[in-house]
Image (cartoon, rainbow over all chains, first blue to last red; front, side):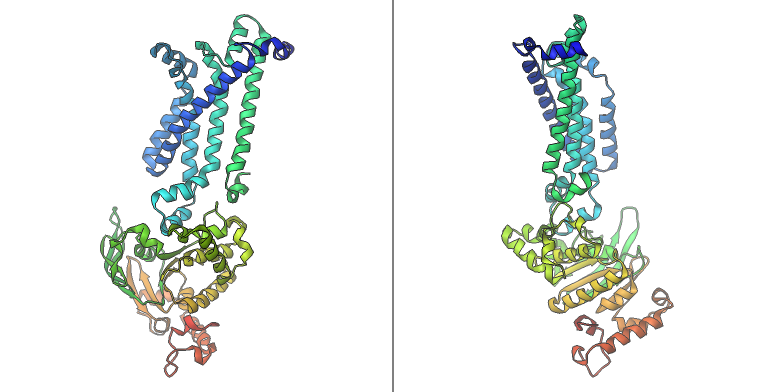
Amino acid sequence: MNAGWEWITDPANWHGSDGIPVRLAEHVGYTLLVLLVALAIGLPLGLFIAHAGQRAAFAVINTANGARALPTLGLLVLIFLLSTGSDVAALIPLVILAIPPILVNAYEGIRQVEPQVRDAARGMGMTGRQVLFRVELPIAVPLILLGARTAAVQVVATATVAAYINLGGLGGYIMDGILLREYGEAVGGSVLVVLLAVSVQGLFTLFTHLVTPRGLRKEHA
Amino acid sequence: MISFKGVTKRYADGTVAVDGLDLELATGEITVFVGPSGCGKTTTLRMINRMVEPTSGVIAIDGVDVTTRPAAELRRGIGYVIQQGGLFPHRTVLDNVATVPLLLGWDKKKARERARELLPRVGLDAALGARYPHQLSGGQQQRVGVARALAADPPVLLMDEPFSAVDPVVRAGLQEEFLRLQAELHKTIVFVTHDIDEAVRLGHRIAVFAKGGHVAQYATPRELLAAPEPGFVTEFLGGERGLRKLRFFAELDATPEAARPGSGEAPGATALGEAPDA
């Protein structure tokens, strides 16, 4: 532990193309990219299956959850080799990891809207699109953000594997540290990943509080 | 006038919810659909604003077949109140009430203004406008539901067991104010309940629905209590019919003579809707 602290506080590690700021930026960059792609896929799919009927929903959710069980590292290496070394393609396993919580929570968020609320919305003369955007989505916001938060924390932690294929990020310190028996570096890298994950969690919690409609805050405070 | 001609609703699994219904509901009056659960009264109500589409037959409002108009547009012109309010939990009371005016394209300020002036009319303090639904009591939520249905001043109001989720004391208060409001507004109201006492108290005319989705009797409360059809209707009115009749006529007697129409004859059931303290 002490070695880890010394490593983190050593000014030499905060400079250069291999320094902590650069690696941290890479790590955050991968996480953001992966989250955006996962949101772009998982959110619409979740909203869609919430309206598509039980059987479709069951199939999609189980497929997504099943995909979660795939070993991320194995998949990473496989896709990296298949895509003949494409950096971006190598992030696919992380996207696969991030989709299920987003998808499932978007689905649940819409499903938990009380039937009478939906009935009233239609009965007032809202079109299907208006019911979705003016009633269902706002009510589902807290759950959707919870899903995104879970995904973000998982991706931050798991993005360390990107170092296996020389994509950098904070995982590089852990890998190098272990390989070179520089345990201070390995521990320091791990601590940074944990700190980042905790910060992400905190930021999401704050953000969720800010964008949750006030009428819903009591239940999800 | 709302008319049903040969209206049948058959579901895909073969269940017949409503069977060859012919019914005419008078403009400006309260028509109550009463009956046990599963008798098709709610389905019948929901076919008026196309929340349910009939399998066959025609439903017309003032002679216009409802299916000739786009469903969303049709519904914006018909007030809709449901059990437990169905209020939008993420919107303030004021924004809930302003829903239909906003859908109709009023500007926000005017819609809010309208909502604000409606609150006292349904017996709510104006200060409640800024609250959220979960901060209100059940009775208050129901009042908001009624205000929301009235916001765009629709000529027709559909009410599906609007007062059944509140306790009897609150319900009596809501019923009383509902009658007072109707005496001012003269809406064409279709009111669904499973409570025969509520039906007798509120209805100008009552349609008693029986299992299988047909109307066993369609009459004024007075006729219904005095001469129920033998069989299902008599059974549905139950052993307390004599008591109900007494109470009903006692209430009419308590109504000032001037408030009753056709004073020569025995007081008609219409007096109920217009008497402030009936």
